[in-house]
Image (cartoon, rainbow, N blue to C red; front, side, top):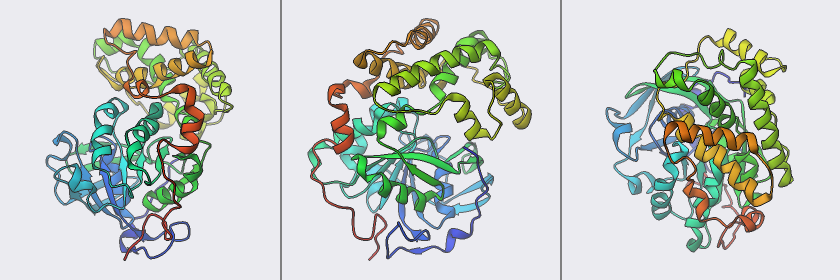
Length: 391
């Protein structure tokens, strides 16, 4: 969706003593789990609003060279305080909320570690909530009885890149994002929490499946990777929006129709790829290849990956396209073009792209019940003051 510039006046925010649904200046203690391309930007955004941020890197590499602050440039500018956590318990120990910001392929290894360390009262926001990762996390937490909801963000609050160990360039701050929760009826609480932390507008949607089926990346990235395979292998510089040619977009449109049919089998209606491009980039609606050309003209060259091990292949295929196909098989929905794209990319890359451990432990026949009510929960209402209580 369209980005906007954020001011940094929030550093004077006070410790919250009232409901997040009413106060937007609440200061909270936030644990950011993930320190790659997105986590530090999220940390800077939250810190710019006056929150106390601890950041943790699963490997330790992401926080190497990061001290007690991070500098942001671009749509968010300034130097903001944060704390580098020694380990996961240190990050979560006094947190009032946590956000997980890692690629989907990191979920299978990380979710069990977080489930073992997360205090039951701390809500976890998963950004983005790909491939029913929130439900996989919910299953890991099933023995904890009463616990905070899990928030499911449709995408990341910001877009950008790391330019130095202690510096991020924020290229996009999304104006609005879809959000769901497990249990499903807790979505308004998670929307209020996310808005307090990050300032974007959060729109509650039906459930985590609605969030998981909305993203444009699996289709757009999958087709771009397939149609530019030799460019990637030869490490050529290729402008990805310019490579969204009429033929490539024809394939994307066919896969988009299959995604819509899959969503309809669950009683969901998802926005089309042109609608998603319009929301994200502000270009007028029209034929998708013309929209891509307009984006390229407005933003300049945005280059695609130059390595077959890139996330377009290792993330968007198993945790996007294959995720669709697993759901489609359970629902009896045909997705032949999607299957062809995933199969061709797997054959070309030589990788096992049909493996998605997040789905292996889920009972897809009980999906609706689990999304609505969670797994093994003893429900209690949210804390009286929301999720940013202070003594």
